[in-house]
Image 1: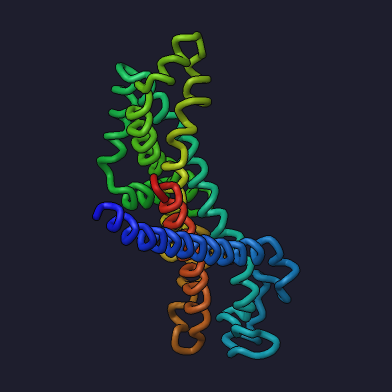
Image 2: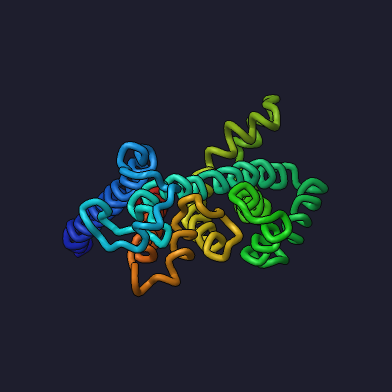
Length: 288
């Protein structure tokens, strides 16, 4: 009876696992292809674009799609497709630079708090608690409002408000593994604290941070677009998808591509990163 049950369940379980692997591979492949398309567009924007993304031509303003302008022109006569291509560069930067900086800050602060504990942990976590008392988006908007609008100040605001999530994440992960025998053994044979953290602790917790960073990059891109829409982020005439949506909202009926094209581009980039993040989480999950 038991052997029969094993025979009945085994093939079904294998089929489910195989199906799951196929779905994972398909999701990773699709997400990678979608992200690669954005990266390609951003890298070769000057070669792909036919016009200057900033130069205005009021005589050609608000033209519809045509062979010369596949997506039409905006209210200043600038080619929408050209600005869309160049905007990919800025939005990828928004996703990568603040996320990378907050990731590094979170690794350093969270690792120190989790590994040393005691007074170090107490001081660092009280700073985290104070920062967490303010809603993330409110804090970012407040910092940008104080420093002034602009891409650099927007990056700084995202970093100042975003590092706390990574610090708490890495602290918690390190607390769960720092008392394992091989960690204590490395310290017992004289390995320095930096070596223990870098060679033994971080490799065991870094994947969780990478998965979190994938989702955080999406949120940063959307936040950057929202800040630009509100006039607090990227400033005109720099092509950025959120700013393009803000500039086109008054011309939605006469030139819908001014809003629809950058909106679809933001959606495309967000879906690509989400697919990669979700599938990466599934693949790294035990048994995945």
